[in-house]
Image (cartoon, rainbow, N blue to C red; front, side, top):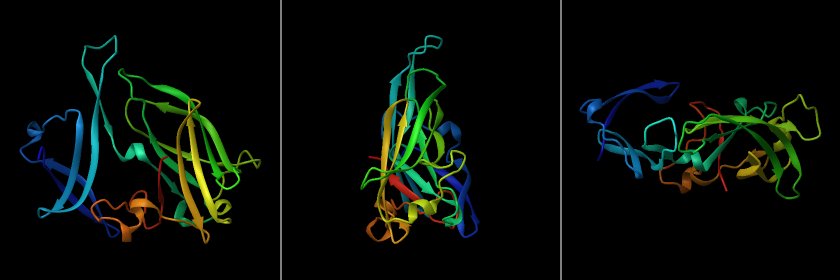
Length: 228
């Protein structure tokens, strides 16, 4: 046991939000983390109800304008997952893909790099939606919300969820950053609905590591897709 945080929780629409905390022993008691693997364990009355694994990676600083030392990076679910979502689960809403990106380098850096994201039918390679632009990379995790424009359609329109859901089959979101494949995120559409996968399937998953099926405190489903 390294550190203990005591959270204050508030019920919002039937969900409990952990909105502020104090450190047992005060902030001066917090032990800095070295490189290695760690586990956040959430508990009520000392009974654990959820665990979140992560790791710390250390890279030697190569910033010529700073003192010698190390830079520390957190690795975890940010590396592994993307999320598919559409507003209110309404098929007429735009399809959104969210993932997290970082520039793991030994110096302070803020780069804008080109990206391209495609929604591909895995059966025949047909591209349903595509978009491109630039993303800012920093040596920390940044959230990237990406949309699709209909392939061969109106360049000013966004692909709607219904354009995907009308045909069952296997699909993949493919994200390229700076001309390199960052990740492929495969999923299945069945009976007009995106299927849950992996740790989102409650019946097959330890409750301690179950992933809830919404993006941020809502009553509508979103889908967490593991990166290949």
